[in-house]
Length: 592
Image (tube, rainbow, N blue to C red; front, side, top):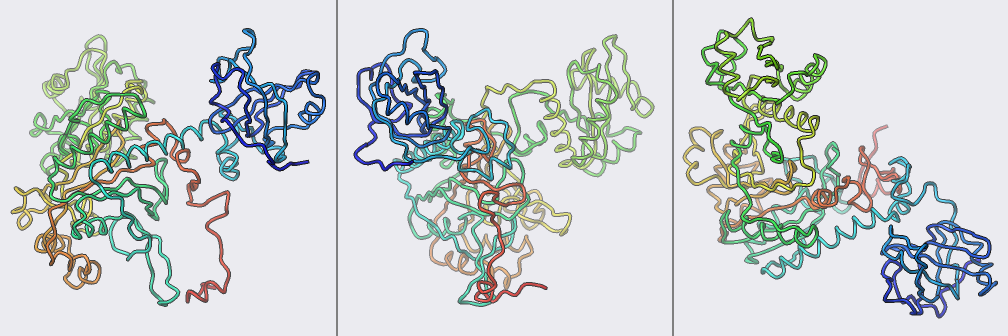
């Protein structure tokens, strides 16, 4: 039988009681984590979000309460009162914060019974992800998930407090917006009152935060919900949260400077770490050349080495053609890996091809100083030796090489670098390496569309010194964009924005946007430029990803109610079919 709370009012949380509370009368409420029956004594571990505490029911003290305690089962919700007592030395539990005390119960109410849960409410549960997501409200009772979401809350509070103290205003932007091209697919919302027209859910507050700068608010922020209808990855969800901000009358150094202080504050308060400021900066070209990635993991070496200049006159056509076509030849010296078996090398070749490389070649420099390579019949001895010298090879090393178009080759070798870094245990998991990547290309060439597209978004400003190239060689124009990277993961990104209508039109022209198309799609935004737009810039962080990295969690474990790989919710059954009447109201007709 369940009971009402009545006059029992909670005085303390379970995980907060310590030795200094001994002798205090307390009333606790929570869930039965475990019950142990030792005859005349029953021990119950009572759990709430602060932790667990042991409750003792003694048959000799009160038979009625003891009898009621015999009814208790896992996940029953109870209220209990009693006196905080010191445990005997042999009964101390050092594994929990309250392990030196226990509560000698003198009153018990069963507030609600529970069916047997489909899995153990424990951090070491063996339940599958699908079962845990179906019963997410039970999964969220596990201490590890509660701790993660509590840390998420603390990070959000730190961000708000910091930005409030630095003159930022928290302003909400619309959730029902106009669909605009670029980026991922929009989630569309049909309009009932305007048949045939649709809202989109925002992929980011980008245009609106720029409009807030034009409105004169000077400094804006928002912890914003965003939506992208795209294929999911291990660190991506269809609905996610951004820490979003924008500032007026600033240059890149201003934006990076205040954000470094924000990151330092988060790390000090959450991780207990002091970051050395300013954070390192690296250009996009340097990152691609050295690490094969625009979000490089700099916690280990194995850097890419360009050997194109050594092979520009080579008779080996694979190398020669790549260089003549403006590509490159990149090498990695895998120290001490000359003993790799052929199957291990073949696995690396497959990894490289799967990542876009045309192939992967190798040179083995044996412990005896012998050079063995599939390239021996294509390269001269002098060329092989010059490669070994360039990569500082020593006997026992394995040299991996790839050739082709610059970006694809760098990215493929960057992937091989990460594979080797993990395989050889070169990555220090206890280290946190931050850096800014700057000077991104403003445009990238889309092979599918055979035209330039914006690498970030079409509102990013070009570097002042590269503006003349917009008319002559747009592919070489660098932007005032910047990403912040932590341990090989992009935490956030932003840019200084275009703030004049003339420059925005020029960028649209390079992207192939006609005046009619630009007006139809961005007309309200472009019109705002007619009324005095200030220079401005900002940044957005992937909040879920930040929490994931700071708690060493899976992306699904930092979101209270996440989606699966196919963007569905196993708990609620979303997305679901809707009533035919609802579709009729929205003027939507299903295909038969």
